[in-house]
Image (tube, rainbow, N blue to C red; front, side, top):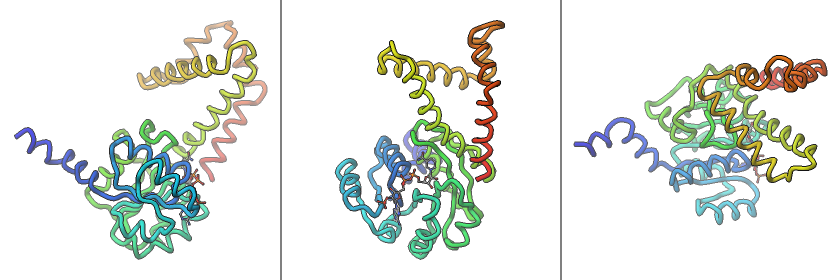
Length: 266
Ligand SMILES: NC(=O)c1ccc[n+]([C@@H]2O[C@H](COP(=O)([O-])OP(=O)(O)OC[C@H]3O[C@@H](n4cnc5c(N)ncnc54)[C@H](OP(=O)(O)O)[C@@H]3O)[C@@H](O)[C@H]2O)c1
């Protein structure tokens, strides 16, 4: 009875997703991160594509998955398609896989290509947009389903991008894009600061920063706002408070807001 129950409903659906072949069209930075996340789950039925044959060989050797430079072959032989080519290539790639992608779920990871634009090309596919970051299994992705959907599509998305993925209005995907950009910006800013710390070894400083980031993450997961975390560190007259005033006066926060605006309006 326990086993029958386990094999009914959602666990059964996950079992079925495990059996599906997933093609990753454009296995570059994010595409490879999606492959990493799938391999970590024990998923083996993957076909990765890109144009560079040497890089394809590397992917084949590293993951033991199927690789191809032929997008049509990959799409024809998979049930789920993940589009992870750069934005400017989406139209060209979609036009070429249009027939092979018929009746399939096509998940676009491109930051600023709308569902309507993709549906205009892939008229017979089910489209979904997902915004996630480079550590796919640890991220909280945001997704929007297109105008045609099948019952299992959300399960497939959560299988691929994590159970905590959240469905959002399509416009809000641009906000999630900023968070993906910020992964790189925060990391680079930390490295920049570490380079000014002459007496700590780089390794020690990175380990300390990693623990600090984990502490911030823990507090945020418990529901604390950034302001509340700041207030714990920066009491009245504190040195941290003075540093914060300096940043405000220098216009650093205004510049950051400009960056956010630029991203969400792109
Ligand atoms: N990186 C991130 O953290 C991140 C986060 C959120 C969203 N995104 C989105 O993810 C998408 C990919 O970004 P990325 O950073 O992963 O870019 P990327 O590293 O350049 O990966 C794209 C890959 O597509 C391949 N490619 C180009 N033309 C192709 C074609 N015709 N058929 C098959 N593959 C092709 C390229 O390899 P070849 O040159 O060998 O073909 C390249 O490795 C973008 O739309 C971006 O907005 C990225």
